[in-house]
Length: 176
Image (cartoon, rainbow, N blue to C red; front, side, top):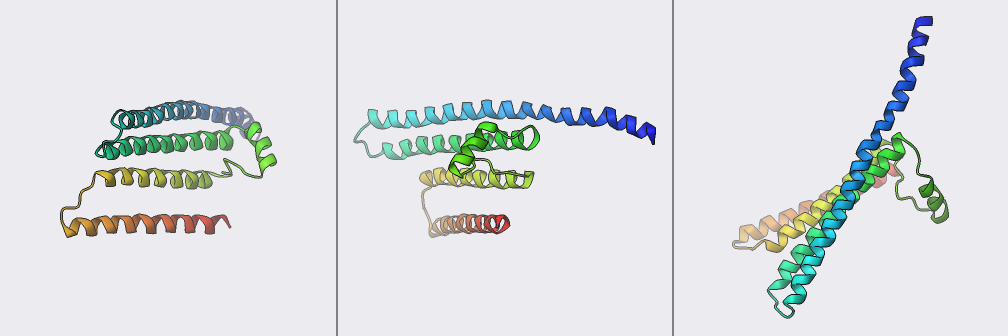
């Protein structure tokens, strides 16, 4: 028994401090978030630039909208990475004191994930929103050539609507 106790005294602190390596994905997630926000802003500026250079040309609207939707998509992916960074930092390293003070003042918490399951739930919702935005971007360039194309389009929209509804319903039931 004495030997196991000595082993525990050596191994357990090592395991406890090893969790601090989680800071590596936190740092890279934050760097990626910053990069994606810059790229998203660049895409939107490109779209607005095209629109202003060709003001009055109605054929440019679709191209401008494509740039703007791409920018929004990049922002959403950046938000996914930001939520991931905040979540794993709070779950494995420490609660964010600045966030706790703000949450007490406003009664709203940006990161209410108390477990990996709650973090996965938040990430899943944001990922689904990014996929919906990507689908919308593809929809802009979609052209209906046959009645079957129109049926496929309607089915895709219905599937997205149903899956989004079910996801939020299951999520709200799990949290209540």
